[in-house]
Length: 113
Image (cartoon, rainbow, N blue to C red):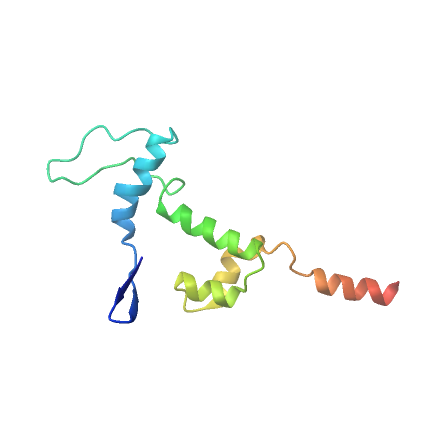
């Protein structure tokens, strides 16, 4: 989310718990991917069936994998995901680098051609 205030653009982080409970899970329920929420708890909280597969975290992995498939750098992606170490990002998402090694393979092929 961005908000402009006196020529300044402020970027606000999305609260993952709010987004997961009030935006993401209801959208999945409407689409028939998960069961609808039957009732809220007495304190007003929403108790969806826990699932990392269908939670907000899945969006994060989707975003990361799509960025890498598109050729974005691991360093940029690490910064965007809030990882302090791009090595962590690389270890987590290396299998999404479809062209990894392609230049090296092409160089060796050229030597033996």
